[in-house]
Amino acid sequence: MSDFIFHDEIETDDSAPKKIDKFWRVLVIDDDESVHQVTKLVLADTVIEHRKLEIVSAYSSEEAKQILQKDDSFCMAFVDVVMETDHAGLELVEWIRKEHKNQAIRLILRTGQAGTAPEAKVIRDFDINDYKEKTDFTANKMITTVYASIRAYRDIMTIQRSLDAFKILIEATHDLLKINQLRPFGSAALNHLLALMNVDSSALYIARTQIDFAQQVTSSIIACTGKYVCESDSLESSNIDTEVKSKIQQVFHDKSHFSNNECFVGYYQSGVNSASVLYIEFEDDNEHFKASLAELFATNVALILESLTKQKEIEKTQKELLFIVSEAVEARSKETGAHVKRVALICELIARKLNLNEDYIDALLLAAPLHDLGKISVPEAILHKPDSLNEQEREIMQTHAQIGGEILDKSSVSVSKLGAKLAKYHHENWDGSGYPEGLSGENIPLEARIMAVADVFDALGSKRCYKKVWGDEQIRAYLLSEKSKKFDAGIVDIVIDNFDEFLAIREKFPDSTS
Image 1 (tube, helix red, strand yellow):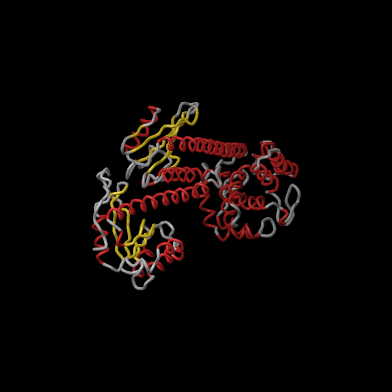
Image 2 (cartoon, rainbow, N blue to C red):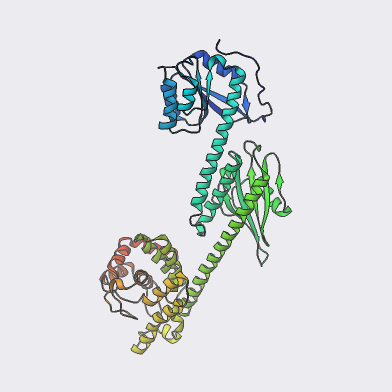
């Protein structure tokens, strides 16, 4: 203990709030028990940025390694030079930085034998943050060193959290315009905001309200983090605390920010009829919270989210219109709208079993309902004829493939181009006996080969004006009999091998009139 002189104590920070539930963890590595006792005594009442210190002891470099391998939460360490060997502390420093690769922890070297490790050489050759001789290391200097080290560690971790959040943000923006990327992007952006402000362990989300031309108001959760992470897309139906919901709804109503010691609720107008609310709850403290930074960040994020939401609405509208058109064609043929939905899902399942590209699968799901678009040109007398078609009627019916392909091919949209090949070639046969061009084998586009099997599988299991419903075993036998004749054998095998999965689609979306 004689190595320490107790005088000129600096005052500790007594302005901390009453709730202190986090600690700065300090590792003391020294083979002298008195050093541990003095360190704990000097730092016992120190509070830095509303946190007390938790002192952990290690009595050798090996023990310190074991502790650090299990726990990387230490912000700083006091390291004695001479322990098991004359240079055990220096070797430990090398291990921490180079092998353990911990660059964040602040390392303060302490020695009672300065001649063993000269200061100039140690500072030059080893990645330490300070060097102290025990005989000159007063209580005042110890506390000053701890303040400086913890603040340096805090800044390093703030930068690291910001970088981590930025990486997540970049990853989330990879496919920014995909519908399923909306929530990850928003949550990553908000996590990034928290990291930038060093607001630790806060919870936050953005809710968006929209008043459309019909004066309907909808509220939806666009992004959420912390304890407010939830599966629900709707603010009202979520399990978020009623009091929090009330605060958000009040901010929407008042169209102005609200803040107190517990939370910040920001209001951002992102369009003529739409707005966003940013809710941040201070679970620890709000010392580092900056409303101006939150406003700048959230305003820009809100505009991006607004754009993404509009894109989502446009894509949703496009999908609905495609199904409406397809259902209208099927209705004209006196076939139920469930057929187009089932065929689309059957095509999707086949494509997944083939391990095709996700973008291709999404496009196929959208385009599949358009496969019989050309039937709009076929007279109803032929479409509704309960008996077999004569040769002339059959020729007219077969024109629907060519006409459907031509209609869709006029569009430059990739989904329509895919739909054009579906519509035109889904009656081509593997052996070349189909129409309209008599293509064979792999010359038939893959999407058309998939549709050929999907369409027949569903049609045989459905009632038509010209046929009764086939039994499951009849359908199975027919598909097998047409392998490498009418159908691609590989696709038939997929349906046969997973027959129950395909039957489940028909059961889930039955015809309204069976």
